[in-house]
Image: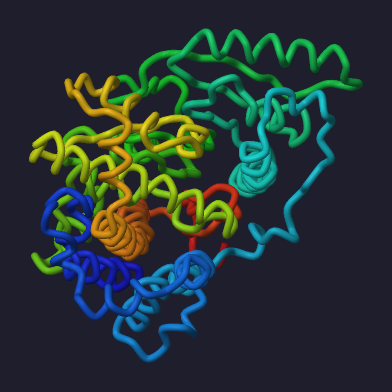
Amino acid sequence: MSFDLLRRAGSVLNTHYQIISSEVVFGYPNIGEEYPDQWRRLLLPLSNQSLWQIFGESNLLSIEGSLLCSHLKLWGGLEDQLSSVYPQPDWLASDNLHRPKYSLDALVGVGDKKLHELTKVAPLVEALAHHQGRSKPLKVLDIGGGVGHLARLLTFYHGVTVTSFDRDQRLQQKGASQIKRHLANQEGSCCPLEWEHGQWGDGGDQKQLLSNKTLLVGLHACGNLSAQLIEAGVRNAVPAIISLGCCYARFTGTGRHYLSQAGQSLSSTQRIEWNQFSLTLSSRAHRPPSFAAFERDLLVKSYRYKLHLLLFHLLDTKKFVAVGEVRPHHYQGEFFNYTLGRLAHLKIKHQLGKDQIDDFVQQQWVEDRVRELIICDLIRWQLGRVAEIFLLLDRALFLEEQGYRVTVLPLFDPRISPRNLGIVAYRGDRSD
């Protein structure tokens, strides 16, 4: 079943390969030729509120019966099928997990998003460590542990011994100081917490830290790291792995796009030739947390697309230029100030004045073209989740091929932490 789902996801991505493999503005002045005209005609007249209902809330009533609606249902349905392909064992069900009350002191330096992730992952780690450790829980190896937020909760509140591994020793020193202060305010004892630093990768996976007593954890391990820790876990026969990938666009090389034999055996109509654009798409947030956030996203897109048009038409820059990110408040100010800042950042010489820039962006054809670019990007956005699912399914199949029992499940609220799909793999039969 998992291979069938991988093939279906691959077929969707291949059918729309021209969409996922290039940014919408990349081929300007040709806009959205790979996006069917009827899709664009259907969406262009809609208000931001209606677009939010479709792309933010997945409420498709306003486009029911259209071909676009059928496609969006198909794309969204792939994620819905994960729960039937990878049923969650009862002992990992949320109601069965131990959820202690953490003191405020234990959560120092933890933002809202990280807090949400930690309170979901730590109980899961405890359950898996005890389930696979049987009489004695597995020792956790947290890859990319940073200052040790997860390690701190596991050792103080979940009865698990942890080694926190990171390449940045300064972060670890900061984390050790925080834990020392917390320990001084705590009654009782905690499990051991050790720190290891270095470069995790091929040939440098610190084999002395991996054994048949290790639970290997990678919470939003970026780029190659998430694939490397899975491979290292398999090589060293660890009994359990929890992996959440992140920043897939930071992949170097192509070898880890297909870990599984199943993925490597896909036909040409199901296999994806990944590039920077499609990998970046797979890392994007897929549902804005609110209508206000959705409108902010549209505002950011409009500034960026207006700048692309200005570069093309006023400064004769025919080659695509990545304009980069700025702080949110820059999108609230005048477009003129945003433009000057970006042109200076990009080291693009010009003699444009405020009146010339304002006159350009206020033209109706510019507004129309920007809106069309935004509509196309919203459609493209929906394929990002399919791309992410495809990557995760390949990794899940690789672990299954190596004898692991695997589940792929949403660990976080996607409105708080969009890259919320995690792989939980452990040794054991289907009855576990």
